[in-house]
Image (cartoon, rainbow, N blue to C red; front, side):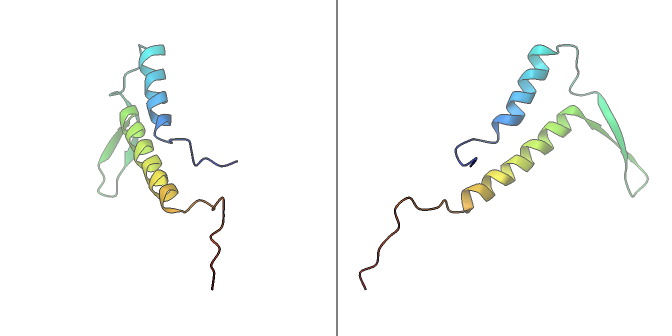
Length: 80
């Protein structure tokens, strides 16, 4: 099954809409987890950070998907 025709960037949009409209008590700016950095500081990772990271990752897959050529339906026949 090929995913050539499905826009992957609809996934973070759908997740965002589910969170905003179906779970109004959930805050996108509240820290979900704190990551310890090598400098010793802590990075509070929020839900909005995760959605942005997911969107960037799926955008990368969209670019890769657009770069890989789809198989030809009718092969080009050379006369030589």
